[in-house]
Length: 525
Image (tube, rainbow, N blue to C red):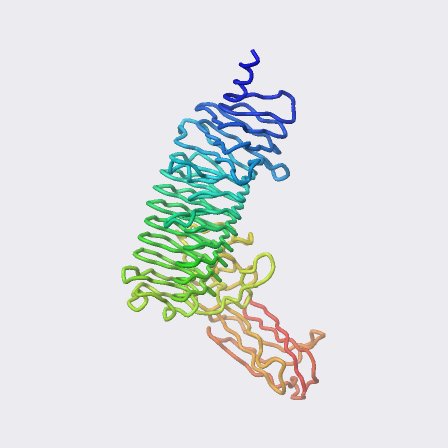
C-alpha cells in the first residue's frame, strides 16, 4: 500500500485537503483554492474538463514542467490578488501554459490578473522552443487580460506565441523584461507577442516595454497573419532587428499605438514591413534608433499611412522612413514626418512616387514630461489636422491618455488627442490649426511681434488685446474679420492713448471664434 501511494503522488493528482499547500501533477481539474500549489510534474487539463484557480493562488513549478490545456482553464484573479505562475529554479524555469491543438468544442479559457515569470521554452522539439509563458497552436478561444509577463524566455514569443490560426484576445497586459532568441541567425522573432501562419489576434491596450531579442522585439506578425494592433505602448525595447512591430507577409491593422525609444542594432526601430499590406493610422512613432529606418522600414509592401506622427527617430540611413528598394511606394496622407519626402532614405527614396498628400513637417510639440510625454501641446501643428474622414480607420473610442479620440471637430495626428483646441468641422480645412505663437523677441524693448494662425476664415471678429497683471486692457491690437492663414501684429509698448507703458509682465489674448488663448510677455527697459 505504501508503494502504491508514493507512485500515485508522482503520476497523478495528490492533495492535502484543507491545507494551505497542495501538490499536483498529471491530469488536473476542479478548483485550486489553496494558497500555494506545488507542481511536481507535467500537468494536463483533459479535453472536456475545466480547472478553476482562485485569486491569490501561488503556483510554483518544482521543475521544467509543461501545463497543457486540452480542456478549459479559468485562472481569474483580481487587482488585489493576482494568480502567480513561477518556478522554484529561475534558471531552469517552467515550460509555460500550452494550448496545443486544444479541441474547439471546449468553452473559452480566461486568464485574467495573472503574473507569469520564468517561463522558459526550451527542449528538443522545435515547438518546445516557442512561447515562454503562453503557447497557442490552432486554438483561439482564450481571453488574456490584465496580466503581467516578466522574465520569460523563448526562441520566439517569450511572452505570448500564437501560430496556425490562433487568434486570442490580448488586452491590458504588461509584457516586460522578457528575452527571445539566441545568437543563431533568424532566432528571436517577436519577444513580446509573436504570431505566425494565419493567426490574427486582437492586441489592444498593452504595454510591451524593456524586452530584448536577437530578432524583432515588440510584436512580430508573420506569414499571412492579420491582427488588429491598437492602443498599445511599445517602448524602450532593445534588440538586433525591429524594436516595435515586424510585419512579414501579413496584413495587419496598426492603429493608435505609441512606438517610442526602441533601439536596435540593424533594421528599424519602429515598424518594419516586408512583402505585406498594412493600414498604419494615428500612431506616434518617435525617438527610435537603428542603422536603417529609425521610424519605419518599408520594403516590397503595399502600405497606407494616415494621421501618423513620425518624428525624432535616428538612423544612419532614413532616420524617419527607409525604402530599401524601388518596389515599395507607400501612400502617406495627413502625416507629420520630420524632413518630409526629402529626408526619405534608401534606394527607393529617389524613385518614390506614392501619394504624399496633406502631410506636414512641423515640430509636434510633445509635452515631453509627465505620465503622457507624447501628448500634444495646444500650439502643436498636429492638433486637428488629421484626415477629415476617419471612415474605416478602426479608431478606438479613447486615446492612450483616455481622452476621446476625436475632439474639437477633427482628429489629431498621432496617438494622443489634445482636449483643449476646438476648430470648425468644415471638411475643407487647410492643414493649419488655430494657434497663438509666443511673441518674439521676448523679453523685448521697445517692440515685439505677435504671430498667430487661423485654420479657416472665421465669420466673427478676431481680436488680440494686451492686458496688464490685473487683467485690465492696455491696448487692442487686432479687431477685424480675417482670412485663414498666418497673421502677425507688432506691439510697440504703448497703450491705447499712445503713452509708453512701464516695464513688467503683460499678457496678450487671442479671441478667434471658439478659440481663446493667452500668453505672457515681458517688457524690459
